[in-house]
Length: 423
Image 1: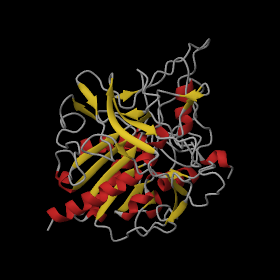
Image 2: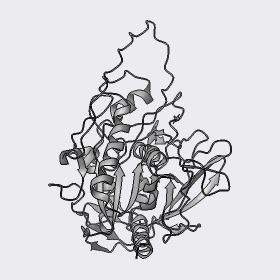
Image 3: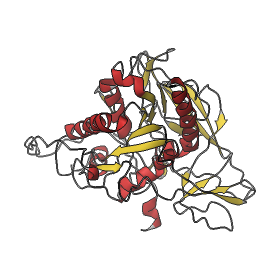
Image 4: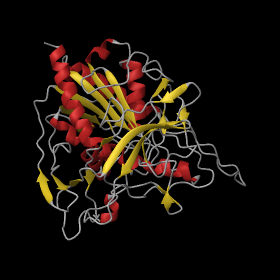
């Protein structure tokens, strides 16, 4: 595979609020560049509100309403992207990491999963599908395999992993919607994605949970899905007793200003420490020198509602060095050395802090670059518009990478706290 295909082919998402309302950034002037062949790192995306398009000289013919689609049987192993016991499980792959220090020295950090982890993770991936239709199929391609490698598999040191395939709104459909170009062929309905995520969750709860604690997480479109799922099936329901935490990345989880609960989720508070369970973590990342534009959707509050920002590196607040894990891709990470592991860590390079600016509450990422040392100065991958980083999207493509090591640490502490309360 060519190196440029391995990079920011993530998904770039838009989002679906748990309430069913849709938000969309303003793309009337310029649409961000979305790679046409994504394949490695990751993000989710939910259908967004249509973007206004120029009036056509001749009205386009109305497409007939698509027929209702069949439900998905998650008792069939092949309908899961990751699940314990799955053959060729893409969440059980090489995650070894080259640690690059400021002086250019390197060490190798090996990774080992824990099949006997005491809690579970239920994950919904972002918009990555390259299927040439409006909704994806249930057959994993390189893009789905790579997104779980980048965003999820490392959490396997702390939890058993469950990640269903689902008929998501495809990357091609998102590109068409954002650019105002021709639509891709319709297959299925937008309800297919909701039904799949619900059915996978119901199957997991009926067959695999068995009273275990569970972390529910997603990114972008996947975060829109888990917000909807939690609001409908967990929040204030018996299943809430099993919730270790909800991790909503690259989306706007909402609370009333000055409060920790009562917005998107009515009974699930915001996490304030890593020893707290039954709570929610949420963040959207932007560069310190390119804050979100006024119309940036991620981290955007509305009226008396504010987007949640919890810094995984410092849940109690303040700034802290992030334990980022970057996909190696084709970057020059350190002068004079070749990195051969699939991931790279750069201790001390990124500092994160939740900040409020205007109507946005977001994770500010500062790269502590030193142009005089042999290490890379900036590993971030931005969404680009007209050749420049797009302040409407920020570091959306890297949300999970930036926080990954800190999320592993948080889940370790939450898992221990969960076990303690269940003795």
